[in-house]
Length: 151
Image (cartoon, rainbow, N blue to C red; front, side):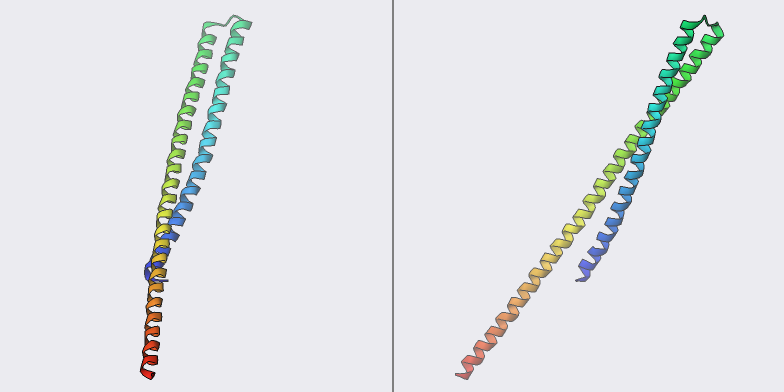
């Protein structure tokens, strides 16, 4: 293996490690995204339950003004929690897309270096074949001259 291909081999190894790191990062971001989406769904259900319980309280008994205000504030706090969870889920989805892009870039970079290595290998093999043909031609020429000189 030529020094050039050895260097390319080292670059391939580094690119493979970078790809593995990006894939691990993507796995982590997907897990974080799933967690954020789950939290958002939980907050939505809590909001629905809060809204239903407020309506039940209003239907069952006459609420005092302070109780109604307290129920509204509680409902609004649940709405804020849902909005916060939605924002966090959107951020997690964005991070996942970024991580997917990083994986694709790392994969592309690795493929480029692998193709370069293949081209270098083919070039070296071609050069070796040319050299071998030259040597064979020289040997054939020398044999021919010896047979001509011997006649």
